[in-house]
Length: 138
Length: 68
Image (tube, rainbow over all chains, first blue to last red; front, top):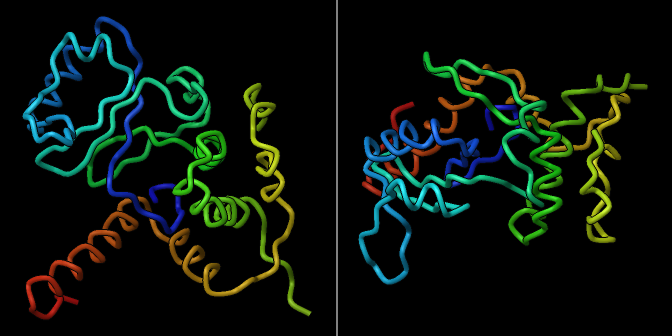
């Protein structure tokens, strides 16, 4: 949505670069949000340093809503793979690095789940309208 | 944009770029109006629009008029 597609999602997706120095601030941020894992059994499981270092996907609920923290998306697209198609946007005074539509489309094509395919038309159309001018009528 | 993983796409998935080549596009209908409106907004305004949708749902849930 930040890049212009009229689509929203229930969860914010964050891709992080797994480096030792990145894990403590990530864990601090998750704790500040009161993050806990989505657990079908209803257990209260919270992120810790060991989980961040060893799990690749963290599906969380927080005080601000659902949050997915991942090392890769699509077919193994990592932070380094994605960085070239990102831009920093200032949203409500906060600078956030947002993934571009082209790579969002690519990741959804690769994931190829029903919910991904359902969004592809609008994503592709938004990208087309961002890139090209409207055709002259008549 | 191409990517090595493109070759792993399912056969029925169009490769990236087939619809976004920068060519002039013909107006297609309702979706285009919404996209055009969304593209006219700043990122902060887009989030504000989304928040407005959420507020409307909450107002319905709480059985009170939405703030417009």
